[in-house]
Image (tube, rainbow, N blue to C red):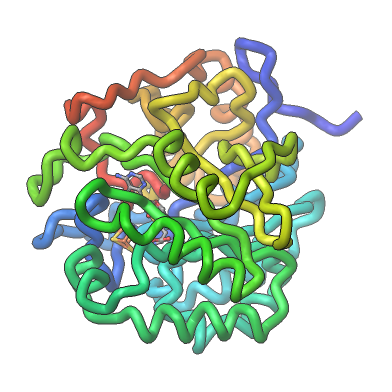
Length: 330
Ligand code: SAM
Ligand code: SF4
């Protein structure tokens, strides 16, 4: 019988998020500092090493892989990786999280490589605000990228919006309107305390999923659904649209009980939980025993025993985890 990864709390691990780069063409205020120092190339997994890790997981029952970053599409030659991961036997769901800036160039190639679902980040529809939040003046490029993804015909496209009180919380309904017009889904994400950023005080900008949902509900009455895309979002529907609205709320709702996923950082650290420091160094194994996939699989199997039961985020703005989101792969 085919192998299945199961952790110490009986949860089946079927979903892996792989970070393919820590670099990015944006500097979103909730994710990075303005002057980021990126990792030296030697410390970053090669595309071949990432592919070996992806293969190891799919040979152990993982059916869903998401490539993320940093901005995955700024890594040189990354399309090769999409083709090789897209061709792995056993993979049922292949997804990408992107800021959308390169989609006009790559959407068709990505579709051809077997990528099914795209999450595209979009926090505002106002170019001035976009520049304040992403620290780059690229709203038009992103909107054009979203259109390119629509034209390429992906199975599912979902927008991701991080909402910060006083910054873009008056754009919640306009963002829903945009998702409805484009016939895509949208998820609202509570800001997570990842990385020690100085641009704003997270305790002041925190905006809960419940607040966001209430704002939308006043315009578009929302119906709860039991739908699940295999990730942490809870979905709601509007009466008159196919677009679903998701909420990712690590603070307000504990989604750890049915956690089915692990992450691999761009440095090859297997992170068993976004909110804990437990990690296993897969890069060390790959560099010591190049191409020996069985050793990687053994390390992953053993790691299942130390996956923590739950995360420990709080809303008081304390940074419990000093990794930046671009390193862990959001
Ligand atoms: N660059 C791509 C993008 O922006 O979609 C992929 C990587 S990014 C780290 C993945 C997701 O994490 C994005 O939707 C981003 O908005 C979100 N994100 C980044 N930092 C966050 C934080 N501190 N709290 C919550 N979400 C965050
Ligand atoms: Fe880059 Fe994505 Fe982080 Fe923004 S959220 S800085 S686009 S990695």
